Length: 377
Image 1 (spheres, one colour):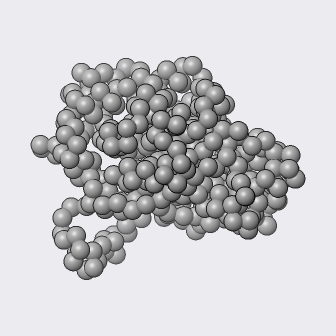
Image 2: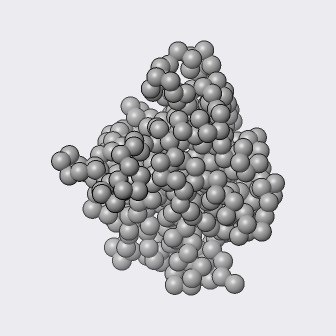
Image 3: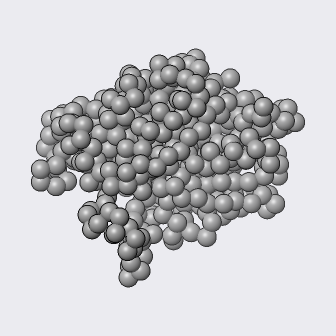
């Protein structure tokens, strides 16, 4: 049976909207992690067969197939192609899936899965050009009506469905910051980060935040539970992983770090939008023949606090094992890069703790979710 291994995983520090990385061109951010991945694995870059890069806002600095642009900007061989994909927030997790599937199918042996997003340079929503219309047409309206469809409303709908109050969300957010600050101070992320533009550590975690400070923020809309404190941060970052077949591992003297165990992807209610990680996790566990208790570490993207809270309630997963070093509320969410960032964190955390299985999942625009189970080797 064919196997697909993660043999390298690296990311930039995640920068804030006004931080050290705000003026770094997206192609250069992508180039930085690609070059670092090549250096750290020792692979001959000419042997790479494709570069699959996730990026959500493919406009301006992030247009014209940034996967190809970033690879060439890194000074790497021209014979290696690149393709840029968009599965919304799960774009680079889907990059990992596509890379693994290429290897598992036997059609390729060495594929880079990457992601990039500079949300300071290319704001969220920038790809919806003025005067070109919204992405929903008559067919959508016939099916879902004219109701508001947004991640913000989706988060509020989750609060209403699962009974979460503002205090529940703020307690979760505070814990995310606490864990992130502890991990940064302990150096847990140092091995996985490739410093860039003078930045060596993630910028978003706040050691001085408190429930009192969070309570002083306005809700996004009257009667809602959601505030900025319980949502992921607007961020800048890039990530890259090298996926290799068993033959490539032998041929290039690579060291497997984790085996891609199980892949799943599914759709869910596009109005709720953010509930997909629940069925995606259940689908992955069933396919893997594992139980929720078999998983040692979970990385669940904290787009909004109700997402992991509802996910844990429905799947029975332990929140103690979920985002053990903080999540996107504290560390940020650079859209197209986040899937690779989470997987990089997951690989390194399994290595640090000696865990065997890790599961990553994240909600995605349009009501979708990927789930990936890896096994440390």
